[in-house]
Image (cartoon, rainbow, N blue to C red; front, side, top):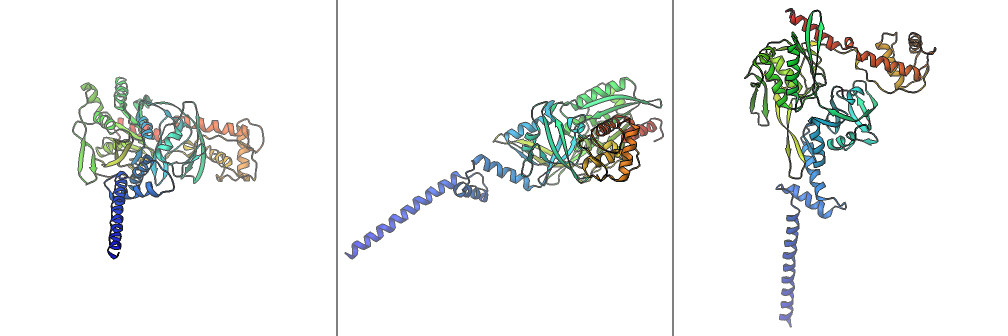
Length: 480
């Protein structure tokens, strides 16, 4: 009897051991199937979430969350993970043509900052400026959104409108702008001839360094040289950058072969010089381009590849730089396709000027600093309402700034409708044949908006351009 109990006990123990072994085997198999990497702790978290979370999340979403988290951990606003759909949108940014509003945006600490509006784009015409922070698109707040999600919100069908809420640090206030999406054909180079004081100047504007910029640059400068221009005024204001090979080709057209135009420095500190190269064009054209005087205009919206160009020209003493300090983006990104159809845009190098200066977060300085007139910088915004002395509003602040810029005697620009503002409004109404009074309403707002538009369209009010022309004239005459 006693022996029988022992056998039963031993049999039970053996059965429990066998069950434990089977359970371990099954558990190990589950963990193996849940493995998504060769990093133990990542697999561990993935397995625990898959098995124990009360929220059912698809594997694809968990993996993309991990990928996004890794790029966010770099704390680099220019390194980004894109899903397959986001990658397709991103590829449009430097393509020949796309639908959008025309802005270059970067992400910094979860905030979406405008690097620059593309020249002549809907964004520029709506008054969007470098360093504006986008906080809302239509009714969608951007808290917790990704760059790809922002792109999807902004892009849409041509002709449709999108409304952005922006925070502008320079004025410490939020503004609302409505922009019509349109097909943006990236003809990145525009040119014209400016004749002044018997000098013939070729003006060339580069809105960004896209796929076809180098060819457009050669075509434009050939045409200008054929008309015997004596200098090139190159406008890189609000140029957000683009392809490094495009700026390399442009620089190769204005400097001799084999000159260092920048250095690339990888993560381990290894430095690689980048050189100008021979471009396949007529010798006569190249000789003229390498000797013609150059003046460059830049502003706080000049970034990345445009800073490479300015940094090289400045280091070579090849031309004068006019305007204000540039944006300060000193890294180069490489875009790599991933197995899931997405893309990783990663900062793989720092770039330095030929003098080995790293301009990241600092910007490239100018030879002649010129700030624009406040009225020239003022955006055109929709105005409505009916206001009189004693009221307070953003519309009143806007009108005060315009009247101040037009030379009216007015001190306050904070939006409070004081007696001085009322007197200035009354005088403005009288001068512009509006209904008498000192109140603000739709007829005043329409006239004020027309004044701002007209002011910004007059080239003499572009102080940076005028200084650039003046400096070029002195260079041509041999005084600089």
